[in-house]
Image 1 (tube, rainbow, N blue to C red):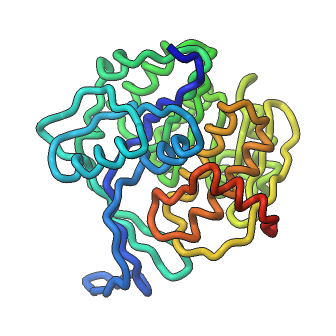
Image 2: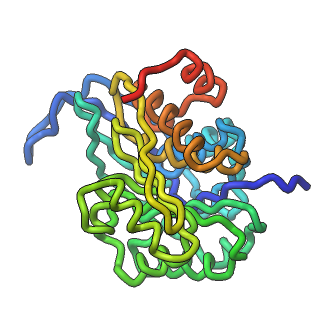
Image 3: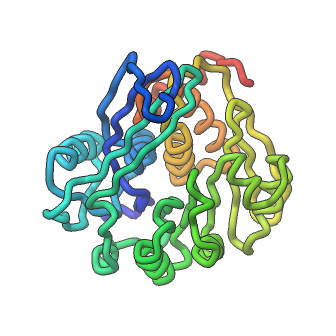
Length: 313
């Protein structure tokens, strides 16, 4: 048995129906899509990114039965992502309608499925070891039953398991008690600039990251800052900006997940946080130049891209 770190991803897997539109339709209106894509998304974005960068990945979620599950399973098998938890044969995997505008901005409508039926006994079957990574999303904490299952399981893990938390775009829907409990256990807070501002109540990414890195005595912080790259603050230390890269923006859907997956894979490989963040910046810049959520390039593609001397923002 290998002692190499693994990533257990709790972020729920969905099937994305991606439609590229000139503008969002008005209420009761209609819009014609110029392009379409049906693909596995949600937590798959981070899982595929991490797997393409050499990290062994386990989906710590529940699949279902039906055509969307079949699509998801094919994608997971292609990326060699393990799915040890038993399926819910009564429900299919959920879907997310994604409307992408010309500037790459995206809007979502989600319908949950089998992934929302995860149970404590499912997580208890997972063999998580010291040195492994666990990725938790804000979507895991929005609803009482799901949040209690996830937080209860995290409390039983070894303190040497590295827990990364991305509050995600629905952070305002997370009950404060669950958010506080999650931040107490987290070793890495991975968020975007808007989420960091909500948590630290400041508009400056560097100041927010520095403040958030004092949340507990073991938390490190990465704040994704759009085209500017990201900001990294190690525990109780001042934040450091890590520059982004110029790119042609086609679709920003899943960019944060790509950044998370690549960053954690690079950390697991032994890179320091700043070097891992720069690599994640490059991978995310490449991903948003392509249509679709699971667009993370392979590690050798990122290496070649960086080797070509790409311009930083």
